[in-house]
Amino acid sequence: MAETLLKVSGLEVHFPIRSAFLRRRIGTVRAVDGVDIEVARGETLALVGESGCGKTTTGKAILRLIDPTRGSIRFDGEEIARHGAARLAPFRRRMQIVFQDPFASLNPRMTVGGILAAPFEIHRIGTPADRPERIAALLRTVGLRPEAARRYPHEFSGGQRQRIGIARALALEPELIIGDEPVSALDVSIQAQVINLMKRLQAERGLAYIMISHNLAVVSHVADRVAVMYLGRVVETAPRETLFFGARHPYTQALLSAVPEPVPGLRRTRQVLQGDVPSPARPPTGCHFHLRCPIAQARCAQEAPAQRIIAPGHAVACHLVAP
Image (cartoon, rainbow, N blue to C red; front, side, top):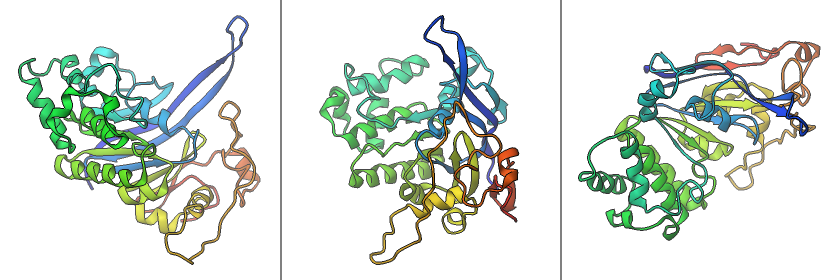
């Protein structure tokens, strides 16, 4: 078993709902409601689920771009959930993010060289004289020519911009990169190029990834393990092959049934979920999924299920799933 790099326990992120008059607090959005995940060195964990399930908020809370309400975030054995800015600074270098939209994540008023120089300037790495060579090396690493440093983001295609975003994430030689749907805004052919680039960089540098995605086809290609989220909670965690061919939670099974079958003429039984996803401002009691679950029982509406290990590396949060 590889050494654990990141361990998140009981992570919660709540946002206040305030009234228009006097700005009084009238409710709470429970965006993340008790997430437990682990990531080993050199591993890719995919965090999947429907839009609004809390995937991106979880990623931002891990990086401390959003302060968690409760819970533990241990990076390389050290608790960082309550660190202030000064104590967080060394960890900022070791954890980075690649954003979803390569058109919005790069400052259009800065050259690519200026964008890639910013991490070195902020963390006071190197001197102004040696930064051009560092920037050229980063651009070569992601498959771009060093001359790109003199150009502006609008002069590049979407795939090239995302390569620049990856280069920025690599600048400080991190150990963990969170990819927030890093290929969802790109054409399918470009998606494959970016995914292959990230896999090559992982093999060369021993990077750990948390890949946030709703695209299970992409997940099947990149992930070592998969954690499935529903309404702020992780409902199933398993190795990739186990999850895709032996999912046990009803929600995971419904998600997989919606994936298009790549073999012409081959059909799978579609499991259509009834009803809408409840509001995170008013989550159901008990199991969050019980209102849409085809096998729910009375217990499910009263008692929130804990994750149980049903096989090595395979955990499910469901009262009705037996080992």
